[in-house]
Image 1 (tube, rainbow, N blue to C red):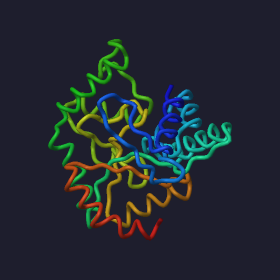
Image 2: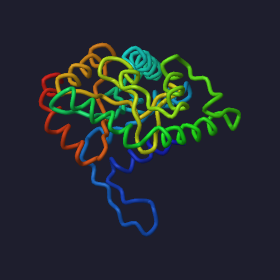
Image 3: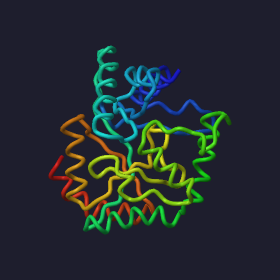
Image 4: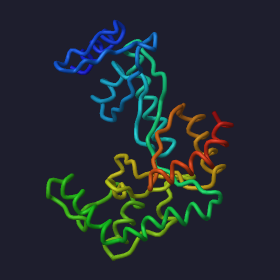
Length: 243
C-alpha cells in the first residue's frame, strides 16, 4: 500500500497536479527533478525488506558502532536485492554537548537526578508490563545483559544507576527522555545520548562514519531550543571538519 501511495505521490508531484482531496485547493509545484526523497526506518526483517523497496534514506536508532554497522549492512543488502541503493544511512540519537566534557557529563546526569529513581522505575514498570503482556514486573524481568540488569538492580533499591554504569561505548550513554526511559530491553531507543565536548562528539561521529558509513544524524536534546542552540554553537563547527 505504501509503495503504491508513494508512486502515486511522485506522479502527482512531477505533474504539478492539484490535490485529489476534496475541498483542498492545493497545487504541488515540483522543484526537485528526481522527486522528493523518502526517509524511513525498519528494524525487523519485514521492515528492512519494505525499506529496501521504497526508502531513499534509511534510518535507525543509534546504538554501538558494531550494531549500527550490522544494521546498515543488512539494509544495504535488502536494497541491493531490489537493484537500489540508499542515498543516506542515518540514525536518531539525543545529545548533550558542552564546552567541556565535565560540564556535559554533569548536565547529562542532572537529567537523572531531576527525574528521580522512583519516576524512572515507575516508567519501566509500565514498559515491562506492556512488553511482557503482564507476565513480569520490573523485579522479575531479566535484562539481556549484565549492564542493563545493573540499572534495574539500582532502581529497585531506590537508587540511580551510577554515571559510569550508563556508558555504552566511547561517548555514547544510556539516558532518558520524556517518553522513553532507560532502554533495559536493548531494542533501540531515542534515549541514547552523545555526551561530551565538541571534539569528543565529532570524533565519535567520525567513528560511525568511517566504520559503518553513517551519513546522517537526527539529534534531539532537552529543552529543545537550548540544546539546539548548543549544538549549533559548539558542535557544528568541528563537525564540519569531519564531513
